[in-house]
Image (cartoon, rainbow, N blue to C red; front, side, top):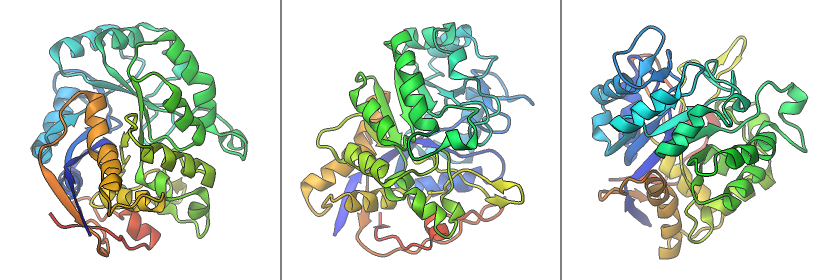
Length: 364
């Protein structure tokens, strides 16, 4: 069995900075990826619109140029969001919108994930001039949707967690204050978030990672599979079932691919574990496996259309750029992933870290 689909778009991924960027970009190109939204939580962050990189931050222009020089010119689309910090102004939003450089802004909860220390509380942004300028100019808000500064017991328990609190307490207020703001709820993990997005206005969408469609908290904890550790962490079986239902619903337009692929040359340290699963080179295969586990028959035209919508069509539709006219092909065949060698050191793909064999292989 083979699948031939339009080249797909990863609308949430990390390429970092430094000598390994070219390796990370190539791993995306090798898996039929036509374009990417490259996260701005670099070191230093992408916190300005234009001008050269400086010691305290990249600009969108300078980081985009660096990525293209390292291989991103092979993409059909490249979006670099602006990292929202306390230095972000409404005038910056207007400048970026007018010049066409700014397409999206990224919200990070303070200290909520890797290199998120520059973020600010959502409460400080709701109703403010920055969001109003984004709303006025059609700039997409990309959200890491977790409530920050929670204690361990409040961060996750059987009844609620940082994500469910964010989507029940913060997101309704955000949409009420900014009813026209275009929003992507990135890497959602819970049935609460999935239900919120499904019932929200059409200009609210969501990305879902392969790991959140495939795995649960039990997979992470059983044997402490730390290569599965990411933020937001994988959740429970009913959450995974809700995500699978969302992406496989006939005709759905709100949910699309965003891997949150995050390379780390050192994943586990003496003081903790770096957050992020690396799925470069294997994301479409993992998504195909997740769709099959959700009961989709990829041997049928109907099943293939469901995967194509999620991988290749909905993301471009939301971000208002054309779907790719080029194609890539996967074959139903075993594939064993190996470490990715980079100039900064080896990176472990998620299937290697989980000791799993892929059941799909990219063949062209």
